[in-house]
Length: 368
Image (cartoon, rainbow, N blue to C red; front, side, top):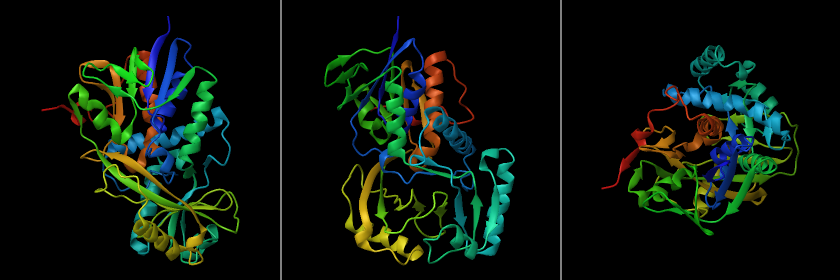
């Protein structure tokens, strides 16, 4: 008899989990998506965790593993270049000593992360040559294994792929009652395993069960430009010092962002002031940008924990309900590995996640 696995949330974690579980003929997999404020659909899409200065080694191991999963998933599902592009990333530093330190860090980390590929220290002129859009460039470190991903397209393609195997999709808001029963637009739905991959919305979803998730929402906005010129497919992503990330996508789409706004709650309104700030940041790098080239402004809500670490796994005293949250601005990097680990747990009942996170209980507590 098939076991019923129900996933709430179709962002990066939900989509990757569904992708892996849909290959199991012993499971009946269903996913629900409210589709509001999803960070995956509104993210910059940079996959390049190796030069981060974060001291959290658990986060780094998770991010490194997530980045390594992308080429495997992309190849298996035959996603096109418009979804995932391993064109490299450039991280800039103005001070020569800082640049050398960054270069040495890259060489050191490549020892246990061969997916980083080629490491090069570039002059400002060489950076400008790699990214022709730039009218102002700084020296930087190039990592050939860095990539950009269209999170919206990636999750959508994974779900379409899973639907061809063993996935049923539903739209609409769901809730839990005090007993952990799942209430949907179609009434109460039974499950053997429930996976809550709803990011910043985990806290209100768990409250009826008298459980508090230690997550807070963070608003993120970015702008997309549609430019008249085109460029080659291998133009790298730029992570500039002192400015917003600068992401040239296929041919003529440029993304600048994203912001990290801690005091806006679940607000999803576009802020004209933030749009102007993002534009000004982009124009400092490419002086030819104009406001009328902005094709859209995207707004999403990330989930953060007090220690900025993601968490995932079964909730205390209930192995049938799994959660995943707190991915922050690196969700597209850590999310694939979290989805794979959750799928492995559903199928085997076993896990060893100490290298990736603190115990889930660190981020969940009983309501007063």
